[in-house]
Amino acid sequence: MKNQTSLIQNIFRLILSAFMVYAGISHLTFNRIDFQAQVPDWLPFSKDLVVVLSGYVEIALGLGLAFWKRQRVNFGWALATFFLLVFPGNVAQYLDGKDAFGALDSDRARLIRLFFQPVLIVWALWSSGAWADYRSKKTKN
Image (cartoon, rainbow, N blue to C red; front, side, top):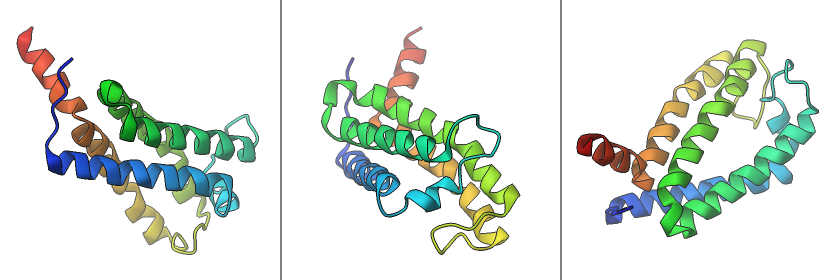
């Protein structure tokens, strides 16, 4: 698999990677309670367990995206999928009106946040070269 990314893509990939590692660490430490507000009540697991496990997943995805060059495309797809999977939690937080992080303290703030999830998905796919890899395979067939 040929995975060529530009300098700009690499910079944005590393920014996203750092963001993911930071977010994962915050899941495990200082924002642990705030992240529980995003776990939907309908999930049949402990909210704390979901927050802790998602924190570890975020750290792993961030480190993999940053350092595992041969698997960068797969990490891009995995991160985009992760962002898709956590989106129902963001929707539940909006619908339930749960405050978190000091900034998500209004329906407006929680609604605006929902529109950033597609940006994160596109960011993961673009910066990792996953979307370009998919398009190049599609045009070869």
